[in-house]
Image: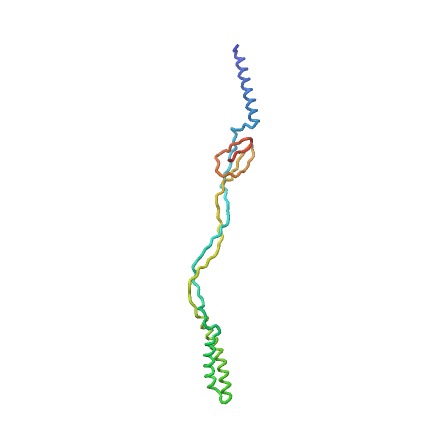
Length: 176
């Protein structure tokens, strides 16, 4: 007997059984059709310090090597000249004192004159000067992904950029 009432009851019963079955499937973790909505995707970066050596050519002035460190030649020549000049003054034993004083003063003056000449005896050359500087380097390091699932917002780090939604398995977002 296929009356409209029987047919309606059969359809209603079938829909009820299917609905209860689907609800049970969902309750047991059957969320293969569930997705989390991606709300925001930001490029993740990693920064680090890297040393770099920078060199440049610089012009410098150097003192030439000194052959007579103690200025003996200047002292000797100054003493002789000073003694000759001192000998021109005084008479008798005063002449001897003036000669000695002239030799001492001349020796000192000759020493200092040679010292100044040696200090001013320079040459110009080019040198390489290097220094180490620290450079900050930044590299891409995946993505920070914010998603919404069951009314809550979460953020996860992913190697690859996701689409607009993430699959859900067993109540958890799949990020691989």
